[in-house]
Length: 447
Image (cartoon, rainbow, N blue to C red; front, side):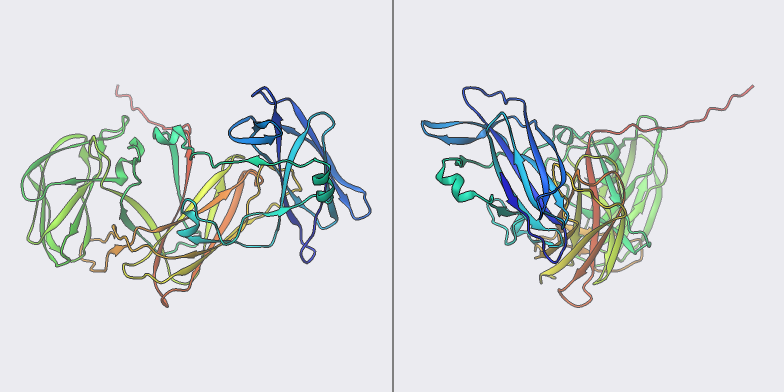
């Protein structure tokens, strides 16, 4: 089977082939090898090789046969970055019958998405990721009965059991030029499991007005914690607050900011007495607490930007796919759409392939801000400012197996919306599983 490969302005083209095998009277796929060759305009072989199919039985898709439906494997993708010299992709299998679908995409075409529309279930994106490519002899194959229909249905969403169990590494990336930033408090993700590593960043509600007992939890190898108390004004008017721990007054001052962080110093893990009083209505939230419930807020550091370009250094740690998430927070009331441009820079060019997936290095998101606002900027004592933000819009940037481990640079530019409108950015990565950690301790011997 041969596919014509067209190139736009002499640039390489992306090509993807999805291969399946029919499973007649069995659910065990046969061992199948498919040969591929990239040919020049004159028919010379530019590159060739074998592709081994390892895909298994699909419980959601069926092949339409003469006598009804029969089993088929899940699609297995093979992706190529086809150089301009290659004009044809030829695939062949000498033993098994293979079902193929092919797709193409100009390599310089920016991937455009709408947020939140394109992340909504059942919504059809305005720009598809791939464009259907037909074989050169598609009509002859159809007349000869060498084409088939496959009935497909969307499989249920998969959730990584390690992430659900709280066994994952979470990384946050900062710009290379020391851009300005600020801590924020945001509601946690639904059903997000508590983790020991997140104790400093998880805030739980505590009472205001009466003395109460609180129990601080530290890591097993530490005896002390350094908790922080967050005071959130409920009506925005300034007032005076007093904080006492174990009878010692740590704060007795006027609170000007809607959200204020109060550091309680170094305390032994275990039970302590805490008293919070305020002359104006406030809510109080405290970290490092032992709690059977999920946190009310999570603390994150965000970078401040306003219609400018920010560059984030990013280190890919493994060959497997990694998911970067850029979350953009907007001020309350800033509901006009804005544009986010992302470009991943690499010093190492990619080869031809085949790869199991391809990374689109440039993305552009048209973002409509949410009106839901449960996020707060955190200020130090005596720093008045507007503090409420919306809940933010996530932009997902998958980094595929076509990119090797190493150093990259992600450029982010925000434009549109109200002139000079400030936004707050958070770039993160979640990796299932726990990495080994080395902790060094010293012991002094007294003679």
